[in-house]
Image (tube, rainbow, N blue to C red; front, side, top):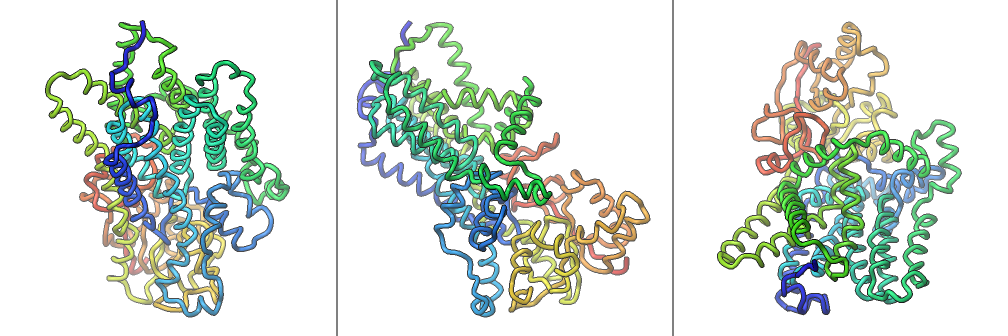
Length: 599
């Protein structure tokens, strides 16, 4: 039996698919502006003492700008393609002139140290914004223009997307580009012109240049080609090669590690442990096969419930409603709406099934699905609205409530990141309580926002710099080895001396802590879950020192020892991200500060 779509979907909507209502133009502009606000205002969170994991793009940018030769310039391409790095390189460089550096204040030095990381985040955030209008354009193929704005709202306020858009990793940027590719593919299906082939191909090209999984952008483009209205020559149309050729051209442009001999030489000599793109691909294929498990859907469900509970609920309703409808009415594959659904589902459905079957799915992998989940939620609400004969005013109130609930956590996270994190609060506590000649010892990757002395950086230059903090790395690279202005403190990471002791032995552990002497110790409680000897260090500090403070992102400092960080942790007792962010007062790791007077 043929599917009957609501009248609103059959008149006007599918005829032109353009935004002609002036009020809708203004509304979409305001939604994008609000999305930009909550993505760009907190963009400098944590810098220069705290960054997101996997800062390969920023490191690639610094290698190229610094003129380093060899594998350093292309190492990040073995992790991430270089499109984001190339875009960042178009922005102004750090100040490198020694004379100018000597005149800069401490605050200016901190901004200079943070610049490459900040620039990468800005590039990611701007590309991530594309998901908002793209979600509108995708929804426009299924619901009227006013309702399509709901998809833009849900995408703009998504906690997952806001969280990843604040980071210098490519997942949020890929989400925007991939959603734009889907919108271009839908346009291509309706009107397979050369220009639309080119636009869809360029979007897929940018997606693949952004991240390896961007190759999946070819799925909706291929589905659009097969399902296009021009059926006469669809298998012979040479224009179908345009997207394929464009995506193939991304390999020599953005995957330098494929053909750079310095990467292979560095790997052979042990300078780097990471494989090249082919080896990494083979590794992930093996990981995927070895971790396929039907129970993987439990982890996906938990992640969505933690980060996007409203969209998860709407997804469940849509699946249930779809199954019931198919059982009762069947489906016509010739219907225009179903063909558009197949284009969108060409990526969304296989990817969701794959993530549900993979035990090592992380929340950042699910970010790619957020705009499609927002479009699904909009479709469910629209169909329910069409079925209602009474109470439509209350239904609008319900829609507003759904939007508020879905977007509240994302807005709250953006607000939290405009304020000091727990590392900033720890810095304030230490500056208020310690003396200028006191020593500070940190549990990596914890850092504090103060200038270091030459003495502290000379303890172990390899372990002290270049590993944990942009601020520490920057200071070690300055002419003279220290910030010219402002007070300087002796600050060490505890691992700088760890290689000299067997921390599994009680006596050597005591000697290890005693080797630091009196001072202030800052520990990251979550590190104890990963490295048991951090727990032993904390036990020793309880014996020789006094705990002066416990700094947590939660109102109750004792609620958990798991930090409110930039990504989900696979712990069984991991707090629900949405609920926690609603109640949080800060962000960052849970810290304890000890003072040891005489160890």
